[in-house]
Amino acid sequence: KAGVTQTPRYLIKTRGQQVTLSCSPISGHRSVSWYQQTPGQGLQFLFEYFSETQRNKGNFPGRFSGRQFSNSRSEMNVSTLELGDSALYLCASSDAGPANTGELFFGEGSRLTVL
Amino acid sequence: AQSVAQPEDQVNVAEGNPLTVKCTYSVSGNPYLFWYVQYPNRGLQFLLKYITGDNLVKGSYGFEAEFNKSQTSFHLKKPSALVSDSALYFCAVRDFSGYALNFGKGTSLLVTP
Image (cartoon, rainbow over all chains, first blue to last red):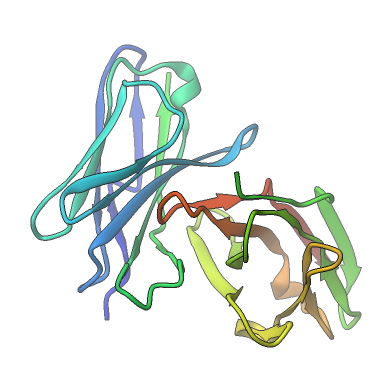
């Protein structure tokens, strides 16, 4: 089974631009969540989607948004980029079924640098 | 809110010695606890989890963790460290508001030859 795939792996943007990151979950997984990882703040939860619905959202400004498609693939968007948005963005999927015990499977991440 | 704390930023251990990476938790109800490992420029890899049952949980790569309810701890252990175990280790607890995980700040493990 293929793992979680994130694209692009690396990207450089300038302040004020916007960026879209993509995530393809493990086949059969319907839950996709996003995390931001920075040296100062560690791993912070952004949002979680299940069957195209956002079920949970972390404490991030409205510039951070996401969506999930009918095939469970997900995208996140950051608008009006700031220097502080430079981070590794990690996507994770889970089967989220009745027996779900919360285990997440992570992708390799998309490293965003904002100049 | 469900939270975990990792009191050590870095742990140094010699190869062949036992290692312990500490984690304490603060939750209401029964915790779902996890350990993940991250190698440089990579995503997180699942090591093990505690849901219920035996307090000693065995996981990947020879790691195990001991759940201690009285001390609210979930320390990660390995009897004999390898240089290849050098990485960043994260403890996490499931957030019961959804399917999110709340992570600790991470502990950098350095195993020297």
